[in-house]
Image (cartoon, rainbow, N blue to C red):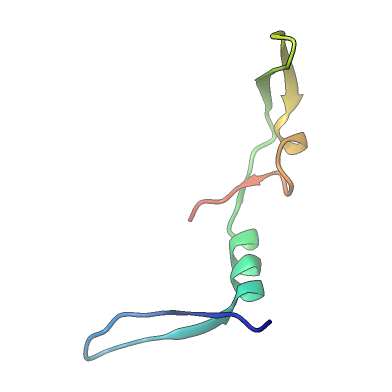
Length: 65
């Protein structure tokens, strides 16, 4: 499947980007902010546990879009 997304404005100076979904994923992946911190999570038994944020996020980043 070939999906594309167009971004732009409709005025006298229109600028459109024709990006594929994979290209958008790469752009978002490169724009994330990394946090090297421990966060507290609540476990199923109700107890709390501190874990590195990197273990909770696929890439260890928060997207800042």
